[in-house]
Image (cartoon, rainbow, N blue to C red; front, side):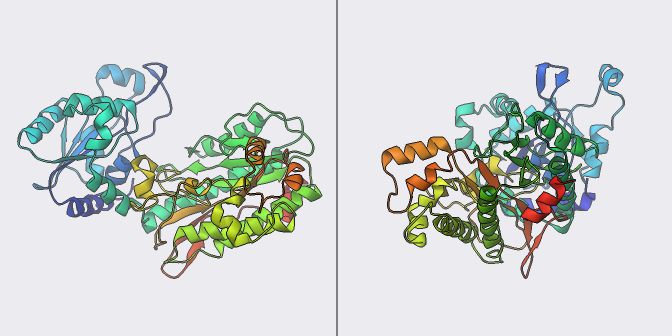
Length: 461
């Protein structure tokens, strides 16, 4: 945890933003794998962590804004629990570290919420993503699961986003720890991968690096020779000479801040010449995006810089034709780049996306419906404290190629004869993490091998 004063100040600012009413936060519960006592790795709700810092299951918190009254609700271990789990700090001891002096057993929460409803006090809560918290809202507030989004507080959603999206120095330090460990995960994969190995062996090594530091992964590992599938979480293929291997993996620090990096490297010791051409095009797009980053720039412009670079490279390789700006405007480049250039990052690897992408990434402005551009998760003006990824890529997706070709799409911009030669190429991306400063930006964490020469040097060990 941070010092108690950090959480006290966060809650004070939140109360000022909300103004009146009662704020209800649910923590997460343990989630059973196959029976109640055999649970998945516990992960606390990120907004609960942000305002209270308590990394323990089955808690709730209430902030009475009008009376400046704050209570943590939860039940201490019984002797039966202690026999199996060992002694643990009490809820009161945990709450004190967060700057809260009053705790109550969970059963008392029902009474407080019913009294608030009876007095017509506004009860603010965030839309839950866990089913058990949806059930609690039904039990405690009589809010049906299909009515949760209607009843969740837009004022609280916007207030939480406005605080969490600007990272403090303490948070940036934690994120850098996660990014440094993420680099170590990628180095391990690049050094160990060999023809004949299974993807699962590489994924296991990557996970081991995080676990060995008493940390965890920030999202399920993508470790695949099928890099054209953007979120490929299967690990059953064998690596072969001539394959490209795409790793997208990040560590989560002990305080649950995320790192998120991607690397692409040859399974052979060297890239082939055609792999080098596409890899260089991907790196050019990455650098074009990075060179656009600045305070006051809308992240959408960073995205379009990557799009124009990819379209230009594809034109130079003969896969695209016509005017680059026109091609990007209509979305023809999305055949090769059907996703966004990056997303915000913090306590979640896709920070706060449980609160709604239109608010988190767009400030309430409508998103585009254009293929490719609709997948851009972040399109706000960059401000000091914003932390985000840069991860443009180039992908050859056979099913998408076949669909667009059969539909006769973008014939003024796409050279289908040349594109067909790349249909089994796969996909490439490199990803790094950045923070906006008052006067510019900073790349977070230590250097990750990125150039062809750097990658091949590690593959030749």
